[in-house]
Image (cartoon, rainbow, N blue to C red; front, side, top):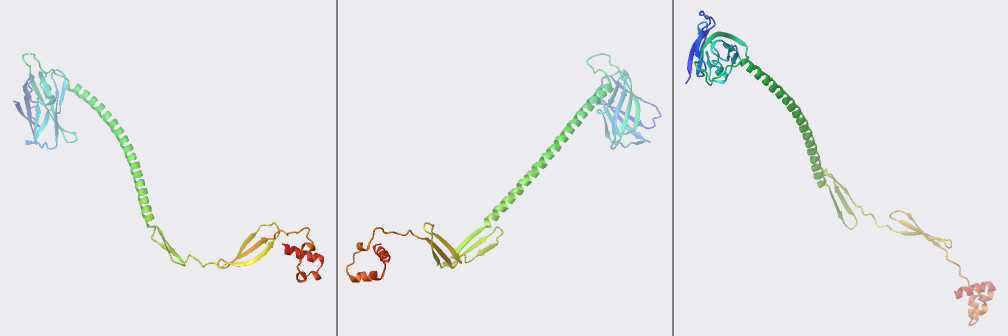
Length: 307
């Protein structure tokens, strides 16, 4: 259960700064402020609100989390929310300021009022009054360190992101190169499959057909020529002891073979006389022609006969 203390704040307050009574440590109290501008409710749409308090014990307090705009013209300060339990912790006159800002936290207006905090008659387990400004300073210092760490982490993250993007770009380039190479390989393989060589042959000729990778065919016909007609040219006796030789002249259709045949050794017959040659009768002798030959000629004829 909460106790609501309803009040009205305007730009022009003829009664001066008013005082709101409250009991120390009442953390169930809600201060409700109806905001008036020229006797009409002020439009607080898109505005922010917070309360600042200089407490009777000298400590200061700023409540953002416990202050909220309830509707278009009403502000609530709730001692049960967030740091609101500090509002009534110090007995005495607590000087308060209610601040209104726009969305950019630019000050729009401020109202002053007091809260008279009546002390408790006993000192039990209660909230000890503290200086909210010190807490804000510590929070601000912690926040600044947190922001600095976050910015450092963001810088490292951005650097790592840039490195990842560069690595990704390299991978994409390598992948594209690999894909291009693969496509070229597939194209070359497909073109290679189009290459074809065929050959047809009959008795006198054959046809060779070659098809390249672009599908263009070339034919060669009648690759078998006429049968050559060999002829014997010159036959020459070479010197005794030389090597035999054959040379080719003429044309492809009518080649001519020329031979060189070495001369053989001359044979000799020793100790042969006319008496060694039997002559059966006069006719044989006459047939040899010995009666008209010299002895040397006769011996030569006899040698030939013997050979």
